[in-house]
Structure formats: C-alpha cells, structure tokens
Amino acid sequence: MSAAVEIRRLTKTYGHKRALDRVDLQVEEGSIFGFLGPNGAGKTTTLRILTGLARPTKGTVRVLGHDVATADNAVRADIGFLPDVPGFYEWMTAEEFLHFAGGLFGIGRKVLDERTGVLLELAGLTGVTTRIGGYSRGMKQRLGVAQALINAPRLLMLDEPTSALDPMGRKEVLDMLQSLRGRTTVFFSTHILADVERICDTVAILDRGRVVVQAPIDELKARYGAEKVVIEVGEGADELAEAIGRMEWATKVERDTNGTISVTVSDAGVASREVPAMVAARKLPLLRMEAGEMGLEEVFVQLVGGGQQ
Image 1 (cartoon, rainbow, N blue to C red):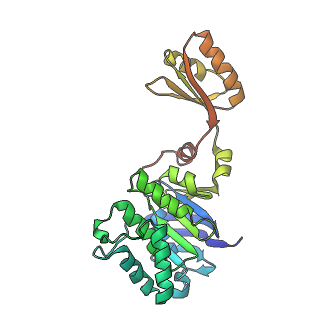
Image 2 (cartoon, rainbow, N blue to C red; image 1 turned 180 degrees about the vertical axis):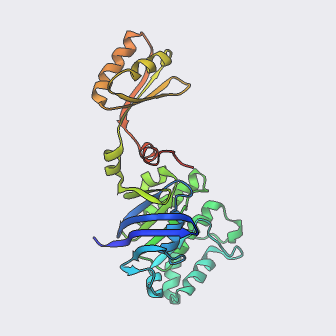
C-alpha cells in the first residue's frame, strides 16, 4: 500500500523556538490516522506544513507523492482541510456554503449538485434551511467536514475537529469520519484519546515537537501497555492496597475515595489468584474484581510523562 503522507526529518523553528524537531511520519492511503499529542506539542504546525500554509525549516514532506515545497494546485485539489477553528459565511445555508466551496474548485454544476446532496446527508443536514449563524457547534463542525470533502479529496486533514463539542456532537462527527474508512485517507489531529481509540487504525504520539512513537493502536498497547486488575471492597481498602503494593507482581497501586483499587501488574494470572485470597484473609467484602489491558490513555501518559495539558 502506498503512502498518502511521508515526512522525513521535519524541523520547524520560529526564531529560537523549535516547534518541530526531526519528525518522521508515514500515513498509508485509505487509513484513519490519529495524530495525538498534548496542546502545544506541534500538531497544528505539522498540519500547516502539510497543507502548504507554512514552510519547513528542514526536512522533506511529501503528500500524495508530491513534495509540498514544489506542489502545484493540482495536488492541493486532492486535499481537504478543516482547521481547528473553521470559518463560515453565517448568512448562508449549508447548501449555499457547499456550492460556494465547490465553485472555488471549479466543479461543474451537475456534479456539484449531486455531491452537495450526498454530503448534506452524510452531515445530517439534509433539508435544514436555517442559516449557518443559527447552527450549534456540532452542526458547524459536521458542515466543516462536508466542506472539506466537497472536492472528493484523496486526503482529508482535520485539526482538533471534536475538541469543543459535547458528547453527542463528538459522536456525530466521529461517525461521519468513520464512514470514510477505506475511501479517503483521514489525518486526524487531536488531544482527545478516546476519539483516537474509537476510530483510528494507526496513531502517532507527538510530544514537544518530537514523535514519541508511531504504531497501530493494538500494537502500541501490546508494546507499551500492561495488564491491570481493579478491585472494589466495601471497607479496608487502605490496608488491602498497602498489602498489594508489597507483592512482587504489583508494579503500581492506585486507589480512589470510594474503595476502588487499581493495580498495574506484571502477571494478571497470579494477581487474579492471590487478590481474592488476600481479601478473604482480611474478611473484607469484595464488591468487584476485573482484569484487563492498559488502555490508550495510560500508554499516552506513560510515553509523554506528564499527561495532557
């Protein structure tokens, strides 16, 4: 499979500040790629370079097989882009706005009418005659994605498309993006880990201008993750947590105020056998016990060493 995006040793400086530091990335065509990192990590700078809105200080960046430094408008016509704060003509309807955006690409009227209808349905805006100024933030974001797709791009790039949305708005935008899987390459920049875990095939984690890791999500969890055991007792949680912390298989013990103990373990099988015995020996009421893998959030915190900002 060919690469939609290839970045090699990309560096970007602003005066004495280095926003990107020798970044390497490869995004396969047809994938949904999660570009993950805390605020200020350099995600927006990378997107600006990919779209030709900024120039790299050093390194090479190829989009759809073309060097962005020398790419012409024919290449840009195959790219769709939604910035983190999209702008709209709020006196237009959604249909008028999509016709306006399509006209900028020189799309013929018949094709544009058909494509507008399909995208309005995809965005859940069919039949909506309200002016854009009266839209909710979620409606505007869905319209923004539709606008970015009006030219039927091979590569769709989105900068924090769900960051200011409520849970329902996020779900609607993510459902829209997920429907594009295999048809359009989606380069999805965000700091919301749950969104990446839900729809992305592969993820790259950027921290302070450097790529910490790039891998399929399942591989990332297997490589950096660990197993966890969660125990909830009705009383005696402090004493139990302290005892568990002394066990060889317990690498990290955390507890909250409601009596729940979360243990990162080196051997879940041993932990699953020994924890019930420890609870029984202390005659504590065991309310819940679950074992599972470390999620993407824990992997992220482990790799960036400070969590989201």
